[in-house]
Image 1: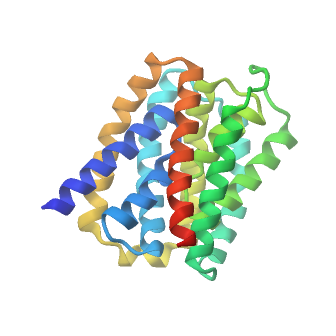
Image 2: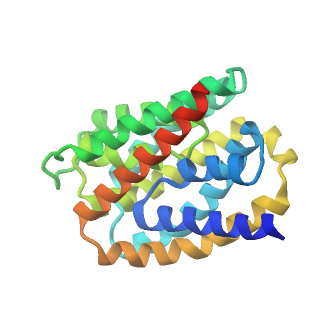
Image 3: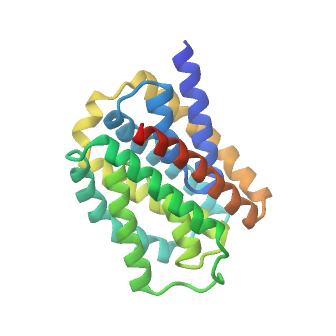
Length: 246
């Protein structure tokens, strides 16, 4: 019973992050599944990808209705990362878990610092090569680290491609959905060993909470959303880096 309550609570937090911030789902789900619910690292990353995929698709629909998705740039960004995500997902099964945990923490910290720096002027559509290059790099990290990519997609869309924060949140969900699906292809064999008594309530709570997160995001300014996202990343990165080196 306690595990069920913990799974629902953790899922609600993940859903709020995805619906409101356009990312942070995996960076929160992976540690929750490992440290709170007792899953192994390999199971946790696969379960996280599954949870984030279904939740992101649901949240994407709401942001699309509000006009916060840049479909052209987002589709190019996501498409460029599909093959790198699938290949890196295969590679990840051959690397030691402490190395992946440490890499996860360092990349999250770097993304947070980038978010806290002054953003470039927003509004103009990025060039196709720029969007594709950023998407390919993000896809590789998504598959390697077992994350949906939103915690990196949002700072990349804001800091590298000059998206306004609300557009970055909505477009990030498109990228997360595509990258997570591609990463799951490389981990399809691991899905059969998941603990569905944990994964199902976790995913259900995330789906419900994502709607509340989207409503909350509409009430907050872009800079507030950006700082909130960055501080969340820094906290999680510090926790996981300490775990990787101890």
